[in-house]
Every structure is written in structure tokens, then in C-alpha cells.
Length: 343
Image (cartoon, rainbow, N blue to C red; front, side, top):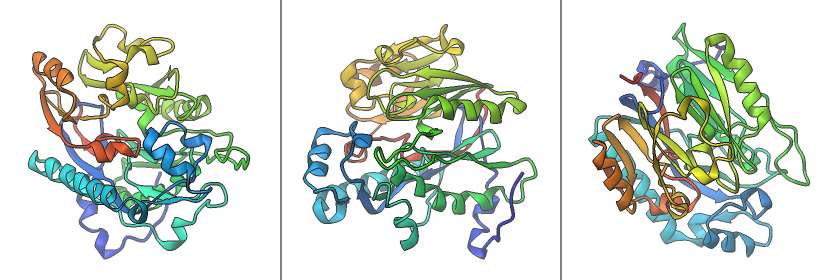
């Protein structure tokens, strides 16, 4: 199941990790947290039309060039770095082991520049995904983010190289399409994958994963007993995790107007903490469960924290407004690589 690759001496510590993620709210053991080194945001195009209005204005005045964040927004850059390091410290405080990917090589920074410039590794949850013992390299709709798989592959491969039960697969990549930059797909992004037992929810929308991506995942996972359920997202909401998250067995949080066909079948009997459009815009569902009793969340969501507390879930508030400025939040900056099964 795993191809040949040379393991460097520096990989020995990583090789002690037994990669495996079994749902959204079992005990979280190990994660990869993103970094902000050399962040260059893609030039303005329709493929990033979902971004924060302030960021959109900045991109539009770059005359078709990428945005060097450290040069143009040095204070915002430092604040984002600070919040990412605070996220790492919060994980370590709660007993979660943290890994970090290496920086991009110069060659990697320019990969697919002819389609879309830029490079970032602030949100490692999107380019790859761990489901059970499967490490999957995906295909992000925006070409400038597809290079993120290379540092993550180098980090995670040594962890699975000697595991006879591990599977390593790379999905087909999208063919180039210059007029849109994106290509025809298949597109599948980690932020669109939500796992409940053997049921896998896959968000589909106009700025994230598509039907072709869900079809590929369904074909790949079917022999292992998984069932894929599409969840159509209405509007410019980025990712399934941007509109819904599972908190524990039988309890989820969602912005229901974004779900064009309602909740997926495996979740229709669950209790729903309904959030408002404004709470969804400020990424209320993009926190992360440390276990069924603890949920990390942006500190601004006072009402939601009260709702969690009523249901016996301890909210762990963090300041993440600079992390979220770039389009994601705690869960996007976190790739779970070891999580226990629920229960």
C-alpha cells in the first residue's frame, strides 16, 4: 500500500507516531499545526472571492501580483504567528502532541505559478486528510495551495512507513484550465470531510469540493466499509466544516440555511445547536473537539459557549481573529493525525 521512500535520521521521532483518526470527537492525541513562514497570498481572482472584505481590497490593489504578507502587513503577520504559537501552547497544555511541517523549498514555492501564484501552510487540514489508517493526498480547488502536500507528505510518511496496516493514496489531480485557474477537478478538500463512524460526509459547493471529488472518495473507501454522503452547500461558504461540526454522539452545531438539502441522512436525528449567519461568518463551527467534553473555540462566541456549557461541554476559548482573517480558524490550522475512536 505504501511506496518506497528513504527515511532520514531526523524522521525517527516522527516514526514513533501511530497515525490513525477515527471520527471528530474521540480523544485527540496528536496534530499538525500550520505555520505562517513566507506566506504569500494568491493574486485576486474569482477563486478567492469568499475572502474577508478587507483582504479582498488588499488583493485587488496588487495589480495581479501575489500579496507578500510580511512586507505589506507586518503587524498582521506577527499577530498571526503569535496566535498560531498560542494554539500550539494550548494543545500542549491539554496533553496533545504537536508536529510542524517544514518550510517550502524555493522550487515548491513556484509550483503551478503559471496557474496561480502564492504559497501558504497556515491551514494543513485541507491538502491532506487522515481517515482511520488512510493517509490521503487530496486536490484543492485553488492551484496555489496544491503545493502544500509536499511538506506534509515529508512529515507524515515516516510515521506510516513501517505500519503494515497504513494506506497512502494520492487522488487524481485536476487538469489545468487557464481561464479559471482552478481546472475541472476532481476537487476534494480536507475541510469538506466529516467522519461519523463508517459514514463520511463530504461537502460540495462552488468554492470547495465537487461531485467528482466525492465520487473518487466513495470509490476509494467503499472496499474498506465506508459510505460517502454528499452534503450540498448553498452559497459562498468555504467547506463543510465552515457550516457544521460534530460535537459528540447525537449533538452537532450547524448553520442550517447553508445546507441546501438539509442534514445528511446519518445526522438527521441529531440535536442541533443552530447558529446564526453572523456566527457562521465568524467561523463558529471551525473549532475542534479535544474529546466529547471539551471544545476549542474562538473567544468571541459567547452565546455558543453558553450553549455548549448547558450541554456539559467545556468551551476552551482562544484568540484566533488573526488566524481567521485569512479564511480559516482553529480546525483549519489543525490536521488531526492521532484521534481515538469515540466512546
